[in-house]
Length: 559
Ligand SMILES: Nc1ncnc2c1ncn2[C@@H]1O[C@H](COP(=O)(O)OP(=O)(O)OP(=O)(O)O)[C@@H](O)[C@H]1O
Image (cartoon, rainbow, N blue to C red):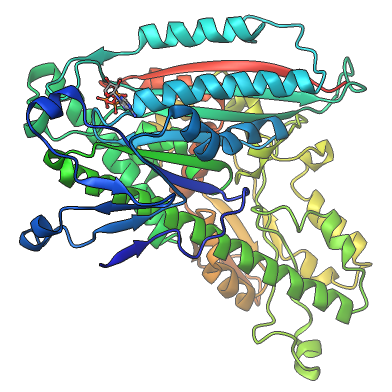
């Protein structure tokens, strides 16, 4: 028996960024009455097997019989157990200031809504319990802020009642829209209450119940249902592509922008948040092909975890090298931490040591070139500390850019308001390094970006970049540019640097240009991190299969 062990080498620790489980439901009445049989079985806590080996022999497409994930829930498992083992830890990350998402994926009628309804309720209950344990007061509530747990329950029922459903031949209560329930928790210390510039920690957990994927022939859809199905399938297809690309070719273009669903889920998929994916499936033989697709999706999603770990490893190695270099040069390595080197995934800056030094002494790494890139959001004096801050942002926006279309909050990346000056970081490094690196510290400068026009009209048309000027990154040394351009971390952040003719007469200078399209993508990446912007996205674009989004807001105050 060949085994696909997607989760084999991964730690089972609680801090996994992406936790993938599979839930098998029992045969339903329809399946039983049509004499369908159950072909899938969970043989232990993490493996699901396809039992019908004889059928397998005749169907070459079905060449795997066992699949392993972080967890497999058999058809007799309760939703409580799925929650406890497959989602609770991720859901409760939000009370510690970490964004998280739990989503159910699977074919129509496989049990996504059944699973997510239970999980959302259990999680809300646990969040409230956690808060009360902590002696937290929930007060000063506005319309958007939950008053108490009953209020939350009420809102959830409203959401359930409003859910767009329709009957298909496979599920008489089929969800015909994606539903995202986002609970945002804002924490601040008791001492800072009432202070004007009090910093708060904000994190959100998303509960996502995707609309079901279906084959038109199987669900016998026609007319409106068929149209809905096409739209739903389209966004699910993009989700599949994004997951596959992220897991296989992380440095390439990831088509988040091809569907609203992936735009909204981008922060959850890109490695900056904890994510639990519960893949639901029917055991029925008649659905074997769909079930197998679901398992392949789950396997790809699990691969993401490996990629993220690899990137973190690369980052750690680079940091260690920088530290060694600083020590070698008699600098205090800890000063690096103060300027944010440890703030993954900001790609941070360090300078290349003098070539002479490296040539004269034994190099401490085979490739001793380092350079500094820091691409951050700079807004006009607004700062916020949040785990969303880790998104890549674009420096310096024109005042008009921050008009009604987007909340300025999404543009924040720093809790230090002095960083509103785009040159600040570099000056700081220069100071801290006592001028030793003076020549190289100035290796990058950012040019002013004046964004014209409303963002909404621009990101809607990805091909038309006319409104966006390029973000220019000047690098004083050609070899630094080369390093930078080939650095996987730069590509990972969505920047592709391309050489540019340097007409400015400077010698020994290379320039990288981040194209306007890439800037645009970064902006949209930032936008989707924000509640208001989600509704903006959704309002602007007419979506046949609409999203039902409920944003709950909790205010958590530590005593
Ligand atoms: N684990 C389970 N145990 C018992 N019944 C289940 C289970 N999972 C799903 N069901 C039942 O199966 C039916 C279909 O489930 P559900 O509506 O949750 O599927 P879905 O994947 O959300 O479908 P769609 O994509 O069409 O919305 C429902 O009647 C539900 O009660």
